[in-house]
Amino acid sequence: MTQTLPLLPGQLLQRGVSRHLASHGFACLEEVVPTRGLRVDVMALGPKGEIWVVECKSSRVDFTSDSKWQGYLEWADRFFFAVDEDFPTEILPDDQGLIIADSYHAEIIRMAPEAKLAPARRKVLVQKFATTAARRLQVLRDPDMHPDWG
Image (cartoon, rainbow, N blue to C red):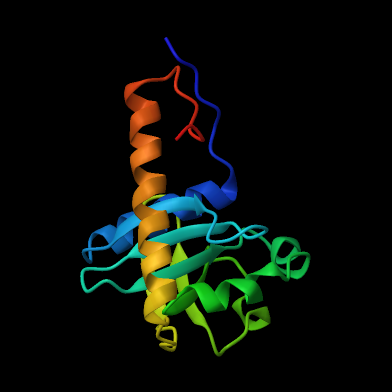
């Protein structure tokens, strides 16, 4: 029997966010690398081809110690922060989307402004999304395969 580690607070937020977005027709992947040096918590591909990025923050310290999120803006049509109900939301930028989440569900509190991706960047991201998803599925089917092969 395979043992799994308990999920960390940010991973619990990712799960709730992904469940909520899936209920709206989005396909979600966690921990996606859109370009070297960046790793987004949740990338969601919408029913109309839109790409949303969600940065999950589990605490004040998590938010204040990480400024990389600004680099994610150019990799999404919409950008959101996801936090739990006890998070001090007043410290978050009010010009970005806001999702309140727990490990089972989420709610969009403030819709993120739209900043449409350029077609070439969208193509790269959709291909990255598909490749990442396919490799992860392959690893589930063939545990001896390394996810970076190919």
